[in-house]
Image (cartoon, rainbow, N blue to C red; front, side, top):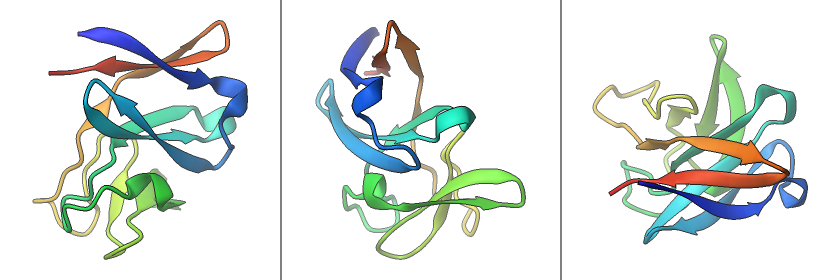
Length: 108
C-alpha cells in the first residue's frame, strides 16, 4: 500500500467532493473544512455508477454523509455504510494532508 498525492489541499472546494484516480480506482474526496477530509470509493453500490463525488454533503443524526445523486441513499463519510440499507457499503480510504498536499492510501 502506498500513499498517493492526489492534489494540493488549497485547490479543493470546501463543502464539496472531487473525484481522483488513485491506483486504478476512482475515489471521491470530500473537503469539509474544520470537519476534515474524507475519501470513499466513487462508485455508488446501488447503481454501479461512478458519481458519489458529485453528491450532496449532509448530516443525519450527527453523522456526516454524502447523498448519492442517483437514488439518494446516504453514505456515512467515516465508514461508507448506507443509512437506509445496511447491505450497501462504499469502501472508505485513509486520507491525510502533509505540507499542503492531500494523500490517499492506495489499496489493492
